[in-house]
Structures are given as structure tokens and as C-alpha cells.
Length: 271
Image (cartoon, rainbow, N blue to C red):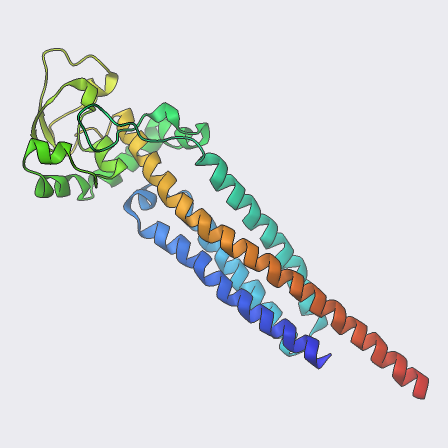
């Protein structure tokens, strides 16, 4: 029993360590400006990571101090958490499977269309109530002001490769509108700017810009997709490791019960 208990304690210590990247991924999302404005994924990831930590601690205590009921509770709870983590991994993959940037003529940066993204993500930004809150949060950041500091010449801006999807969608008008560049956030309107509704939404007011445009919503979803995919990779690796730890834990628990039964049998035989 002692050896199996030590094994249970050791593997649950590994599970404790595995909760750290999950919590870290959630905290990283919370620090990203776009995710902090939308507030969709970071808290489920953080809560799931904390639950894995708490359950693993329970398994660690139950293993080293040989508390059978705590080990049983650990095995049941960890199985539920593994299923929840697997569901979250699949969900993130499904909602980020659609959407990509388009290269406009004579530009090095990409532009984005809202209809390219999954329906679930689009519904998060379609509501005017939700978008007004997100827009207010995004406009308080320095992402558009940074473009003015980095690019003063039109050709340098058009050849830029490091413009984020949010900057591309929110800080300038779509290329198809035909606006004339003055600086990255100030453009001269063409005579006919009715090519797209976003062309009418554009404003040189630095607090408005293209925050009301569908291209801004698409840029936000493109940013979310990129960041959520990174988190999904971390969750997949953690999920696989947790499954291995859980299987080893089940084997160790079964061996411990077998040892107990054998010991009781021997005691009964010799008494």
C-alpha cells in the first residue's frame, strides 16, 4: 500500500504542475487588450485551471496520507474535469475553425470580413449593446495611436507586415473605399465612398475612426482566433498529460486496493 500511495502522491504532484499552464493561459488572455474587452474565454480557462489545482491537491493529500475516500473523490472529480477540458478544447477549435485575412491590392497587411467567421463568434459582436461596451474599451487603448507613431509615409504604411488585425480593421478605412492617406488614422474621403457600409462608418474623429465598422468587428475576431488557438494548443498538451496522469493514478489506486485485500487475506490466514 505504501508504494502505491507514494505513486498516487507523486502523480498528483505532476497534476498540480499541469494546472499551472492552464491558469497561466487564462491570465495571459486576461492581459490581452482585445480579450480583456470581450471577456469570453479567460475566466472559464482560469476557473478550470484552479479546479484542476484543487482536485490535484486533494489527490496529493489522499495519496501520501492514505485517505481512500479522498482518493475516490479525486478520481471522480478529475474525470469530470478531464471531460470538461476536452469539451473546451473541441469548442475552441470549432469556433475558431473559420475566418482568415484577405490581401487587398497594393498592400502588405491583411484585411478581414465579418461574415468569414463562425456564427457563435459573430453573435458576440452583433448586438449593439455588447459592441458599444467593447468599442468603448477598444477605443481607450493606444493601438491606433501607435500606428501614427510608427508610420508617417504612405508607402511605409502600405508595405507594413506587422499591423495587427485589430489595427487593420479599426484604425483605418477598408482599402476598397478609396480613401487617400494622410496618416494611418486620418484619410481624405473620395467623392464616392459608397462601395461598402464601412466606408460610410469611417470618421477622422480619433475616438470614432472605424470602431463602428464591420471590419473592426472582424479584426477583433481575427485577433481572438489567433490568441485562442495558442491557448488551445496549451490546453491540448495539458489534456493529454492529464489523461496519462489519470490512467496511472487509476492503476496505482487499483494496485493499492489489491495490496490491501492481499494483506487482509494473509492476516486472516495466519490468525
